[in-house]
Image 1 (tube, rainbow over the protein chains, first blue to last red):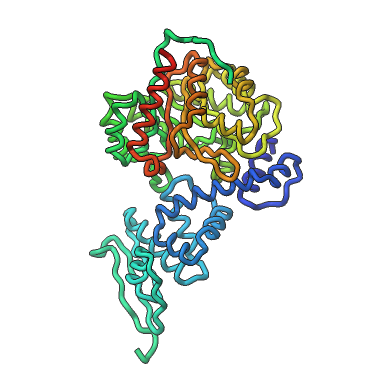
Image 2 (image 1 turned 135 degrees about the horizontal axis):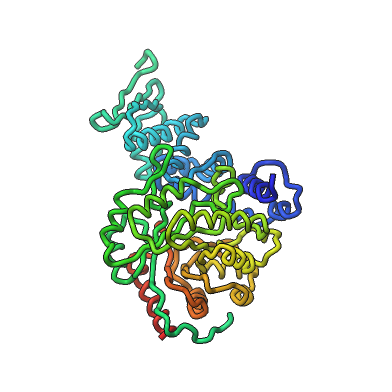
Length: 178
Length: 292
């Protein structure tokens, strides 16, 4: 490994907050510098800016849940972020596919499906919701309180380019008393 | 700042250029009468198309619509000419496409590394000023010069991280590249100010040591200050000090042909169309007043 390769790999690791603490004198200086904090902040800021612009519903939900910045930092540190905004936004949304929060999962996968269908994907996507998605999206758009989950039912949404309005949704009852 | 002799009085005034990245035809219509050249960043007008990016046709059409009125130069962001392993071939495909669509006066890139082992760094890392980095850059510059029939220019980037150990001074490293390859240079007055503030760069010594003959283009921009740093987030009008430094560079660089006011597409909403037009007029006026 050349000196240049060692240095560039190590700087990338420092920016992405990973790897063992460096032994090299210069890299140790970088690791302990306020400049590195600023470089990280700028890198994350750009990603956040782009995500906010392209993934509006998910960003608004994450902000409402006060975890937008943490989620973006986690995404930046643990993924190979694309310089192309379409790839970045789709990959970011895809990274939330297994998020432990049910609502974040649903909104991000809904938005990802919309992006893919608008990019002419022929796939029919399905997203399950624990509350009326219309009310939820409206609340996100208008900065209103989020509707609560509806006990005993779920909403099955399909997103596909051949649907008359791209999106269709049906309510299903999950308990006998409904 | 070193003052310059009134050299180059007989040479033509530098052309005025600005950034335009599409999707704002009203802005394009307003800036065209004010400028001579448009700076195009191929990365910024590209979209991802499967595994390969391509230029957005609708933006190419916008450029084509103003063809008789302006010249074009390309200014890349994503070549990553300084990556230890390889540059970004995808960027060159975009540049090829641009060359097929428009006549470009020259193309340029930042003297930096934006990806490491195919991973996006998220920022522009400057290069260590070592023989190893010099050899790598010169080999790649020569390859670019063979590939394209127009001049290639390099632009220095701001250095935020602590300065890397190296054997060359900042100007000495650039001189070594230009003397070995014959490539041109872009000097960014705001980037230099950032390095003065953030790194303590001695700008007089830098400009005195730098061979200014290869400088073809000047960049002017206004950035932001954040947590005690000057940052190259081009979102403001050019400050008086940046403009003064730019004028000094124009006086001293005998082959400088274009002065470019750069701003981010995302900053248009902050600057406003009026603000951008006023800034272009202000820069043009300052250059005219200074050199006539």
